[in-house]
Every structure is written in C-alpha cells, then in structure tokens.
Length: 157
Image 1 (cartoon, rainbow, N blue to C red):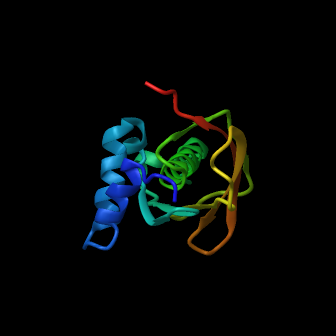
Image 2 (cartoon, rainbow, N blue to C red):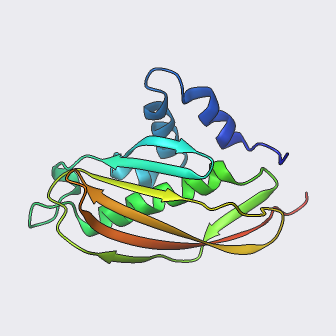
C-alpha cells in the first residue's frame, strides 16, 4: 500500500465532520492563497475524484454579469491540483504543465467543476492528463479543461 500523504490525512480527518469539506477548502486556500480569491468549496473529494462548487457573486463575475472565464479556470486548477495531491502517494510529487480550457457557454449561475483520475501506477514518472468539466446549476457544460500533470518521485533528502 502506498504511503499516505499529509493532505490526504487532513482530508480524511475532516471529511465526515460537520462542515468538514468547507474547513478543508479553507485550509487549501490558506496553503495556496490565490485559490481563496474565488471562494470555492469542495463538495466531494476522495482519491480519484474531486468536485468543487463556485457561487456566482459579484467578485467572480465579468462585465456581462456571468462567472468570469478566469474564475472558472482557477476553479479547474484548484480541483485538479487538490485531486492530484490526495490521490498520489506521499513519495510522489506533481506539477501542472499547463492548461487547455475551452469556454463553451455563458455561466449565468453558480458552477461546479469535477474531475476523475483513472487508475494509474503511481510508482513511475509520467504525464497524467486530467480532464475537467464545468457545469452550471442547470447541468449545462459551460467549460472543459485539460490539465497535464507531470508526476515524479520526490527527491531523496
């Protein structure tokens, strides 16, 4: 069994508690402050699957009054990175190599981004492409993103 990482340990400690995923979402924003700028909240997070919700409010809208494209990109990066962090063993590391995002429609409501990681052999260096979907509250896909992650062993100290 691969070693459990500290982020996954924190998630497992908080997940089933009242407001646990909200607290975990806040902790992620403290660790990586830029993510706090959109105020997203994880609704589901476990090794292999993650989903986060972004409320439509003034600070994440554009001049059209819809959720800003970059806020949705930020949401995708939050889900992809946190999902990688809780899915890989403690002796591995990851880094995003980029993002390809396609905006498919106006996000006139709250949005939710989700991502699933297929079963990988985490013992080797590899590129792992994460596919994300962003939907509005009506279930319409408003954006899709691909985030290629470079996964490799942590340097020995």
